[in-house]
Amino acid sequence: MTPFNYARAADVGEALALYQPGSRFIAGGTNLLDLMKENVVRPERLIDISRLPLREITVQDDDRVRIGALVSNADLAYDPLVQGRYPLLSQAILAGASPQLRNMATTGGNLLQRTRCYYFYDSTVPCNKREPGSGCPAREGLNRIHAIFGASDQCVATHPSDMCVALAALEATVEVQGPQGTRSIAFKDFHRLPGDQPERDNHLGEDELITAVQLPSEGFATHSHYLKIRDRASYAFALVSVAAALKLEGDRILEARLALGGVAHKPWRNPAVEAGLVGKAVSHETFAAAADALIQEARPLAGNAFKVKLARRAIVRALDEAVLGGQRP
Ligand SMILES: Cc1cc2nc3c(=O)[nH]c(=O)nc-3n(C[C@H](O)[C@H](O)[C@H](O)COP(=O)(O)OP(=O)(O)OC[C@H]3O[C@@H](n4cnc5c(N)ncnc54)[C@H](O)[C@@H]3O)c2cc1C
Image (cartoon, rainbow, N blue to C red):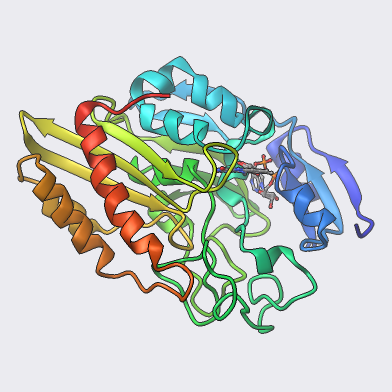
């Protein structure tokens, strides 16, 4: 590990004032410290934000729910309001990591966790995400866990979060504070596709802090389901995951949301497929047609064509479960 200096901030203003180029904010440390130990990230200064007063979950005047950036993944998943109103989010979080990790991991940190691409973590090999312009061995190498949607010649990595897949389906907003003031970023615009700048995972400035995530009041509590397919039953990242949420009137679909994880550089949605479900009757054929339409855009690599079939089946199953009300963990 390269030497670094350390400073602990008491509030958001102090954290922002302590920032200088080469600094990194540290929250739970469950991803950043691993990256530092592997020499993937070498910050000159760590700004500890774990004591900032951002641990509240509150209902706003407009009935939106505001989740402070330092609310732990465990506290968020088990919060009674979240379990009642946003079971999809609770389910997604509990499908990830382990109880110990969820106690440390924070809401802001989960959004900013880096890819699990093997080549990204191995600082002895090229990787455009780690060292821009050095190359992408995953394209022709081991690419079983890599992207089938939205990849570029330069990068085929996926975003590993479960929580973000649910937040994408729920159309959350990310609240950000930086030297220029505060701003809100719609979740669909927060993470980015790799393009020719794969080193950038999202549209957050390096000197900006996530202060909160906001959820619309509509939580699709009656008909939602998070399905995660992985190599082991626990403690493994998704090969494919699906957050499905429906609003129904009888068996007629009034609104549909579908977000996929483990398949792209960001949670993957296809608005046209979601719109195509509206007005249809709930049936296996309807869901299979939506899944077929969604996988049309898939561009698998040599080692991950299985993900296309897996995604198709997972979409149908997640929608079926959403109709039933889902099997809560
Ligand atoms: C073995 C293991 C298994 C895991 N399995 C899963 C899984 O199955 N599913 C899943 O979704 N996740 C999984 N995770 C990932 C885990 O959820 C993340 O590591 C965690 O959410 C990161 O949160 P953190 O607070 O520890 O972030 P940190 O490690 O502290 O920070 C991560 C990044 O976010 C930045 N950052 C943190 N907070 C802020 C903020 N408020 N504003 C600006 N920048 C910030 C840091 O600078 C850093 O770049 C796993 C992790 C491990 C180690």
